[in-house]
Image 1 (tube, rainbow, N blue to C red):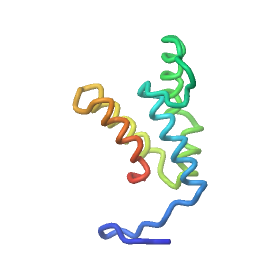
Image 2 (tube, rainbow, N blue to C red; image 1 turned 90 degrees about the horizontal axis):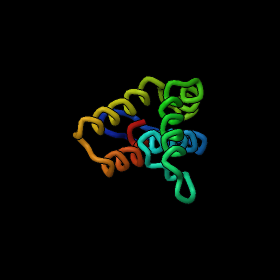
Image 3 (spheres, one colour; image 1 turned 90 degrees about the vertical axis):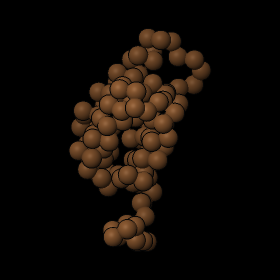
Image 4 (cartoon, rainbow, N blue to C red; image 1 turned 45 degrees about the horizontal axis):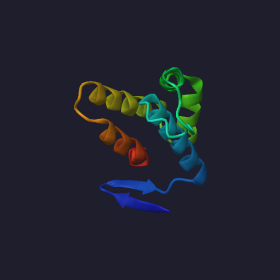
Length: 109
């Protein structure tokens, strides 16, 4: 189904696109150390490894594939991630705002 958002026609996402967007969201959460996908209490070393793997994922072919399957451009997702990272690292936004942005990522794609 299509609907109008401003001057743009926007179509609903398919279940496959929603699943791929969820993967991108999880990797963003992991890259910021939010790690909701880990059960129990991870060690500091485990958390560091998970964060680094998630950060590296954004430079991988897997990320490009998931972006394509999500119906968006890799460059757009990478820019959103880098903007969040910059704003968090410079103190413009806090971790709760990062989490809010990631949870609403589907509205930007």
